[in-house]
Image 1 (cartoon, rainbow, N blue to C red):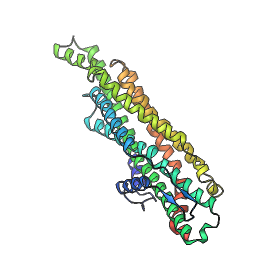
Image 2 (cartoon, one colour; image 1 turned 90 degrees about the vertical axis):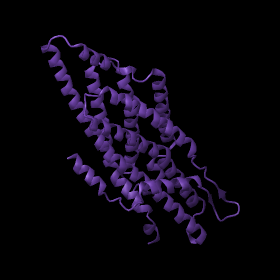
Image 3 (cartoon, helix red, strand yellow; image 1 turned 180 degrees about the vertical axis):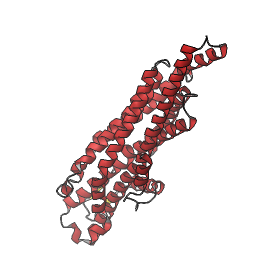
Image 4 (cartoon, rainbow, N blue to C red; image 1 turned 135 degrees about the horizontal axis):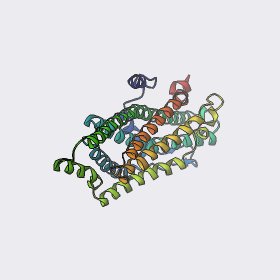
Length: 330
C-alpha cells in the first residue's frame, strides 16, 4: 500500500516545474538579487534580500549534529535490527531535515517577500496595468510568486516519499527490536549463566550511551536546537496564506488549510528532531519499553506529516494555476 502511495506521489499533477536542484539555484539567485524599482522617479522600493550564507553555515552545523545523533542511534540498534533498515532510517531523517529547513528558511519567506512586493505595486498604482512598464513588472512579480509556489510544492512532494520511507523503516526496526528482545528474554530464562563473551557483549550494550562523549553530544544537540528555533522564528514572522492571498478566498476557500498544515508540519518536525531523537540518548539501554515507545512516536509523527501533505494538494494547485503566466495574459 505504501509503495502505491509513493508511485502516486511521483505521478502527481505538479510535474511541470524544473528539477529541485535547478529550482533551488534559481530561487536562491533571484532572492539574493531581489530588487524592484518602479518607473516613477519618486517611487522606488527595495526588498531586503534573504541572506543565504549565514543559514547555510547553520544548516551545515545542524546536519553535522544530526549525523552524531543518528550515529548514536545506529550504534544502539547494532545487531538488533537489519543494517538496511537502519540505513533507510538515517537517510530519510537526514533528507527530511534538509527539506524542512529549505521550506521554512528559504521558500516560505521568499514567497512572502514576493507577494508583498506584488501587493504593494498593485495598491500603489491602481491603473498600472495600462502602462507597458508596469505591466512588465507585474508579470515578473507574478512569475516569481508562481516560482516560489512551485518550489514549496516540489519540497512537499519530496518530503512525502521520505516520510513513507521513515515510517516503514521505523516499523521494521521496531519489529526486529521486539523480536530480539523476546529472544534475549527467552534465552536468559532458559539457559545457564552466560559465558564471559556474552557478558562482554552485554556490557557493550549497557555502555552504548558512552559511544559519543557528552561534550560532542551537547554540541550536536545545540546546533540542531538552534535550527529548530530558526524554523519557528521564520514561521512566526510569516503572514498567513489567507492574508497573502485574501483576494482568492472566495474562489479558494481551502487556503486556510495551508496555514494549519504548515503549522503542523513544523510541530511534527520539532517533535522528531527536538524530542524523539535526543530521547534515545537520555534513556537507559535496559528500558526497552521506552525505546519501543520512541520508535512508535517516530512512526506517528511521520504518519501525521503524510496526512498534512494531502491537505495541501488542492489549495497549492489552485494558487499555482492562478499565478501561471498564461492565466494572467489570457
